Image (cartoon, rainbow, N blue to C red; front, side, top):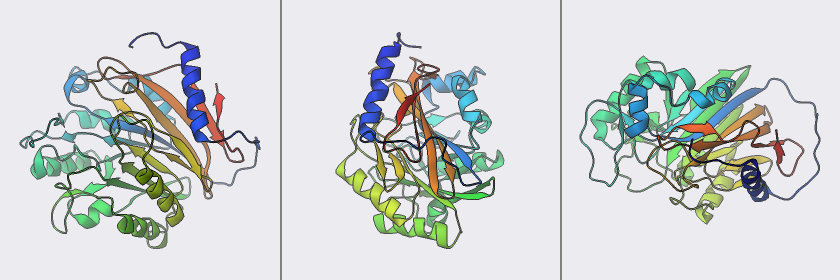
Length: 334
């Protein structure tokens, strides 16, 4: 793990998170929860090329330090910031990421599903992308935000746990749009406001989901604050029926906002990713949501510190912030 992150520094970091969240208000601890409930864990960018990929080839687990926290959730979701394939040719772009097919087994050990809606799953073309879909399906590792055609890319991932049906949607809005799915062409789900609204509404009306969560790939790289575009779209999605909004892409964590009782995590930052040195880039979040039919009734934020090999470590076993229904702001817990 890189450096010594003191408890005071971590505490200051979490205080900054909570100041982004809102003003201090009263809490109703111990409020009775509606049954049933479900827990979901979300992490940001997972890139298994480079050193993290070598870690897997060496039969080591890059997620080992967070295994206990991940495995404690009913549903575990991450953003796969690479293509997993053995074929394909690199696109003409500054950075291209392709992971070895052996990484699927490691991902399967920790994740329920992965978002494919980002600017790197198309790095080696459509043949490599299609190979990845086959690899994930053989291992029964679910995915969303991408597919073999437009309808599949925009279809919600539906997961039933504890008597609740959860719909998870994924969208990319990082240009260029060259890897967008078409009616008969594999690719990603692109973020068009009207289509996103329709998808959220259909998740409830057509698929009868109790809970809907969009996972967005958006914003500006290395920018610690969400853009006006992100804020408008996040609120639009909640108005359309989303219970929470999760985001990524900037390679840094961004603001947390509460809108109409629903949390918005604009960027979770990196999770498994090498090649960064700045403190902001090697700090990521794992978010655990606890939900009932009304939406999120509690969340917890765990801070990840990413070492020089791109491997995340808990910044401190006690360093986390949390919120529960009835509070206007989170609190440092631990």
